Amino acid sequence: MPDRRRRKKNTKRKSAAADILRLIYSLLLIIAAILVVYFVYLKVNNMSGDSFFINTSEHSNESTGIDGNDGNNLNNFNSNGESNQNSSDSSFTDSHGSGLISSESEGIRYIKDDGSFAENEWISEGGFLYYFDDNGSAYVSKTLSLDGMVFEFDSEGKVMKINYDYDYSPNPDDVIADYPSLVKSRKLWAFLSDEKSLGTFNAIMYKKTTEARSYVLGGDENPQFSSMYSLQTDGEYIYYLPLSDKDDLSSEERKINGTLYRMKPGAEYREIVAQNVEGYKVVDGDIFYMTSGKIYHTSNATKDETKTTYTSDSISIDDYIFENKGDALYLYDKSGEPVRSLDNSKRVGSFTYYLSDDGEITGVREKTSVTTGGWTYYTETDSSTGKLVSKIMRKSGPGEIQEVSTDFPGRTGNMFYDYSSGNLVAEYMADSDSCSLIIINMNGDVDIVNSTSGALSSVSLPADMELYALISGSAICKLGTGDDADFVSFDLSSTTPLAIGVISENIFVSEDNSDDNVTQIPSVTLSPADSPTSDNESISDPREPVSDNTSGDGIIVGGAPGN
Image: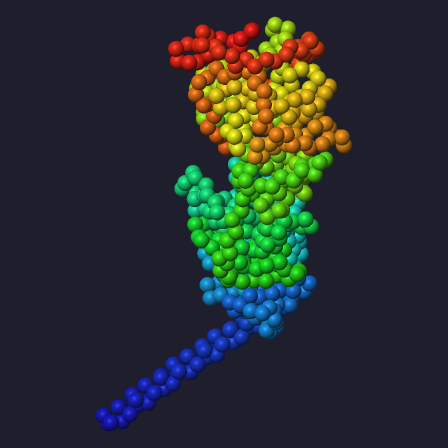
């Protein structure tokens, strides 16, 4: 009996185990059926376009090119630019769920790693470049002008063309006057200099956000140049594209025109990304650029240790060449190329010139005073006695005013510093019939230049006689106006005394280089009653012994003898 009961219990246990196995099997079949239905549902929705993930293409680290005329044609290129293969879209979003998605109601969007949607930002995905607006929707079949470039998007939101925008104008609210073409990152600002230029292009400046001081990218000896609104910062690099469509670029401009560079601030060399570039965009180290109508994608650049020392920002006349063609005066750099700048003006020595694109000097900025050694020198004119007289004065920064010379007849026009002699030279009209030049010597004496005496008759200074250059002991002046104007060189070595100095020490050191230190003294407008009489007094040499008229320290305190 006990054996029979034991056999019955074992049979019941086997039957229960079999029931459990059948139940598990049934559950697995049900789960499999549910999964099949689910995947069929996804497939149907994918075909209907209701909601699906957009495929993106996998790429190697080699540069890739995208045909700008066919948004669906993606080519991988080898180092020689030859096509290796064609690939079609094949990958879904990554395992974190980030990537491109699309719906009929919201269009193409991008889910980031944190689950949020990309808004007002560029996204590099699968070797393509996308831009998402403030609603998180991708630009599709549109053209966008942004940050100095024009971007064209295809029907899938991919950038298919990038061109530099020659007509780009930023939002005025985004412009900081002291930082032209400014681009910013968390640690770095990059912008263009409004003082240093290479023809069409301007020098690149940068500053750390934690510092007030700005530096020249590449240093003062090897400055880097770029076009307006063509800078980008990404990671440790400043990217820049000097690009111009002008036909008359100088040889130095042509060397860099159309080349996309990048450089780390403080580095001794730059890197070349590509040449013949028409536009570009950098996103998180991915560089997209266009050449010959095709977009290329890379993250690499080639080291370029080429260094060129530019002198275009120098004010020394030794760095420039003047060519007098009789009816026009031209300014060239040492290589013989015309000097140009963004604002068509250039300071050389004491002069600031207005220039045309071919280097012709079309005018000289008015300058009625010179600042040197902490003093500003100018002419003071007086007609209270019925005769127009002038004298040289100087004013210090704190406001102290001193006489430099005794009175002399007539008045002066523009005044410049002569670096070759250390003297001042000014336009001068002794009377209503002639124009000349005068030299204010280092001891304050004033001499008239003999070769210019009576250079023109019946003219109005400075309109019909203008001082244009001081070069190695000679002066170049423009005589006359319009088509009748001529440029004439005058020797400054022969002079006749006009007035004596009243300051004993040598008063000039060298002109302060900054135009900010030059105080423009208002010129005097003459009425007919103020003009010198036609009965001109002869100008004798006032430098006769004046020992009875001096103080103990040798400074002359009286006027010129005979006054």
